[in-house]
Length: 105
Picture 1 (cartoon, rainbow, N blue to C red):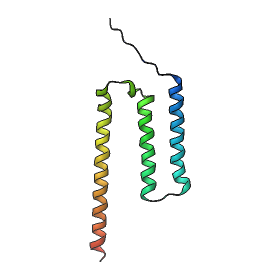
Picture 2 (cartoon, rainbow, N blue to C red):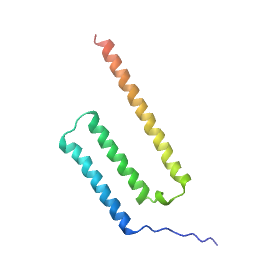
Picture 3 (cartoon, rainbow, N blue to C red):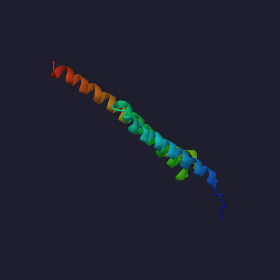
Picture 4 (cartoon, helix red, strand yellow):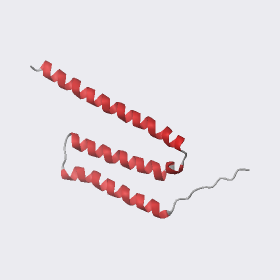
């Protein structure tokens, strides 16, 4: 017979996280309301989106209380994908600018 103890977080933690998600959503909508355009708009929107997803994953999906190996199993591949997408975007922007320079001389 195994005796496992289940950690039940207090309700105040969930209310604080709900408030944090509300504030992050407010800032995300504020980017649109202010009218930020171009690179900074998409950077801020994606930043707030990823931050909200990370908070939801950690608290509401109870990953915060899992073993480190499971946390790394979920976190490291996601981080690698973000890095590869960023590298691809930088290279794609470079190639696009290079083609514009040589095709429209």
